[in-house]
Length: 68
Image (cartoon, rainbow, N blue to C red; front, side):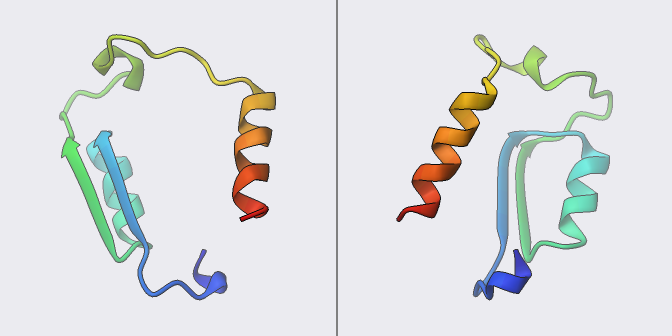
C-alpha cells in the first residue's frame, strides 16, 4: 500500500486478536480495533452472522475498486 503513495494508512476493525492488531500497527499509521480480547479464537464468534465470502465475490469487489 505504501508504494501507492497514500497520505495515511488507517486500519479499522471491530474485533481482532491483540497480537495481530499490534503487528498491523507496526506498518500502518493508525489502527482502530474496538475489541481486542486477550483470549481470541475465531472472529466469527463475535458476529451473529458471519457467512463465508466466495472467491467470485472477492474478485467482483476488487474488480469494481480497480475500475473506479
